[in-house]
View (tube, rainbow, N blue to C red):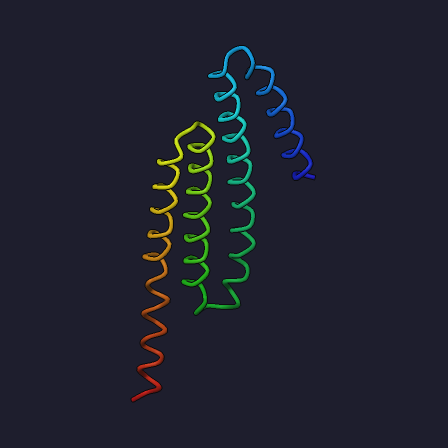
Amino acid sequence: MEFVRIGMLALVGIALGIQFKNQKQEYSLYVGMAICLLIFSCTLAYMGRVKEQMEGIFTYVSSGRRYFVLLFKVAGITWVCEFVAGVCRDSGFSAVAAQVELFGKIAVLFAGMPVFLALAETIAGFAG
């Protein structure tokens, strides 16, 4: 049911933003940013519950814990970068949005390095 509430919040925010768009365009931008932040905070709360459930799985899979942490880190990086780039793009700053997306891609690459190194060590162990 949370999805319905988030959808309704988005629709109400869009309707309110459209009302301001014709008179005061900067207010429309502020309404859009406020709605984005509200939805973002709701998503953070939802992800907190997912993390709690994942802690239960960690008790069964001890060696996979660092990979789950890495997965959450990568998901968080992409999530935040996509959010910020979307706000920048909606505000008319497409160049800034492109740079945020580029930074996100590089951050994900560096966050995934431990997996690549573990894979290289495994291959080296099989090879000799």
